[in-house]
Image 1: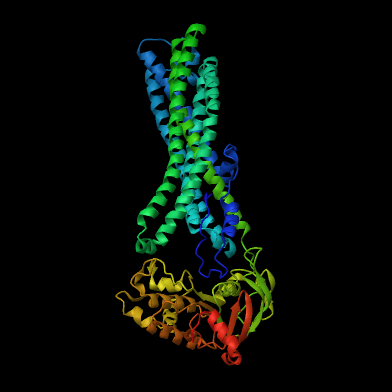
Image 2: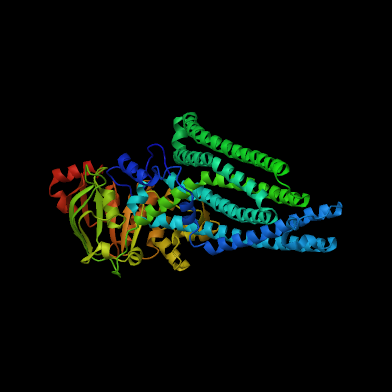
Length: 621
C-alpha cells in the first residue's frame, strides 16, 4: 500500500510522550510497508504461485475437470454439426470431420450420444465449479485470518507506526481485491483448459486449418500484452490513491465532533473529494482499457476467423463437414477466449494488491517479537538499570532510567508532557523493549519471560476507555475464554460498577456499541477497570484513570485503587495529585530522565524541587 502523502500514525493507547510516532518514523514505516514494490511490468506468475501455495491439488482438479468437459463439449459440437449436415442430406466426405469416428454412427445413435455427452459435460462442470468454489472459500478464510494474525502479532513499534486506515484498507480492500484475483485465476484456469480441449479437438478434425487460426490468435494475445502491463500500473495507482482516501476518510470520521464544532464540514468534504477524484481517475482509465481490450480482442478474433475461412476457401480443399465442424468448435473457443483475455487483463489490475498484501504480511511477520521461555507465577521485584529508549536518532524518550519497585507497591508517575511517562509504561508492559540497559523481574530479564504467563499476570487500563459491540459481560471477559461469569461479576464488584450494571434492563447481557452505548464515561472507565481485574493480575498499570471522570466516578475509582493496594503492584500515571493519594512512592520524570523517586515526605523535604516537579507535571496539590 502507498499512502501517497504523509499520514498521521495510528492512535496509540499509551502514546509515547516524545510525540506520537514522528512524521519521519511514519514515513520510514510507510516506505517499508507502502512504498513502490516491484514495477508494474513484472510477471504475474510469481504472485499467483504465492497466492495459491498449498492449493495445487484443487487447481489440478479444476484443470482436469475443465479439460475433460472441454473434450465433451467439442465432441458434442462436432456431433451437432454432423447431425445438421446429415439431416440436411449432406454426407460426411472426410472422416476427419468427426471426432472418434462418431460421425459414422446412425442419426438416432448420435442423438443418444449427444444427450449422454451433455449430461457428462454438466457433471464435469459441477465438479470443476465445486472445486473452484471450495478453493476460493478456503483461500479467502486463510488470507483473512492470516493477515490479521500477522498484524496483531507484530511488535508494538510496528503496529503503532502504521496508520489505522492503512491497516483497515489492507484487511478490507486488499483482501477483497485478492479474493477477486482468486476468482479470476479460477476462471482463467477452467476456461483455459476448456479452450485447450476445444483447440485439440479442432486439430484432430483439421490440423492445418486449426493451426492457422491458433497462430493468429497467439499473435493477437501477445499484441495485447502492453495493454495488460499498463493495466497493472493503473491498478497500482488506484491502490495507492485508495489508501490516501481511506486514511483521510478515517481521520474525518474520528474527528467528526471537531469538524462539526469548527464548522469545516465543507472543507473536509472538499479534501475527500480531491482524494476521490485521484482514485476515480485511475479507476476510469483502468475500466476503459479493460472494456477496450475485450472489444478489440473479440473484433480481431472474428476477423482472424473470417480470414482463415477465406484462406481455406482459396487455397485449401476442405470438405464441407470438416469446415463446418471447425467453425462450430472455433466459434465456441473464440467465445471462451474472449472471456479468458478479459479475465487475464483484469488480473493485471489485481496483481499489485496481491504483491502488496504478501509484502506487508512478510513485513509484519519479520517484526514479530520472540517469546521467552521463563514462566512466572507472580510479578515480584521490578528493576530498571540504566534503561534507555529512542524513537529516532536525534533524541531519547528515556535515558539512563534506574529504579527498583517491590511487589505490592503503588507507584505514581508524574511529569510534564513529553517527559517519557507513556514510554516508561510501555516498557513496563513489554509493549516495547529497552534498547539500552536492563529490565528484570525477580532477577529474570523481561525479554526471557514467556508471553502467555506474562499476559496472565499483567493488566492495563488506558486513558481512553473503549468497548466493542457485544454484551457487558463479554466486554469485561475480553476474549479470554477461561473467564467465568462469576469472575466477571467479582471484577465488576471490585471496580464498583456491579450494582449499576444490574440496574440496567438486561444486566450483564446489555449490548454495548463500539462507543459504549448507554454507559456514561465513568461507567465505561470502570467497566475497563473490571476488564483489567478479571484475571486477578499481579501488576496493574493505569494511564490517567480519572482524568475524564466526574467526582462520584473518581471517588469510586479511588476506592478500587485503595482496595488493590498491597495486593497488586500498581503503576499510576496521573496529573491529579488526588488520584495518587494511595501511592507509596512517586516517580518524577523530566526530559526522559528520572529526576526523583521517593515518598511524598522525601520529596517534600526539598520544597523547591518538589514544587518544580509539581509544576512541570502540571499537577496542582
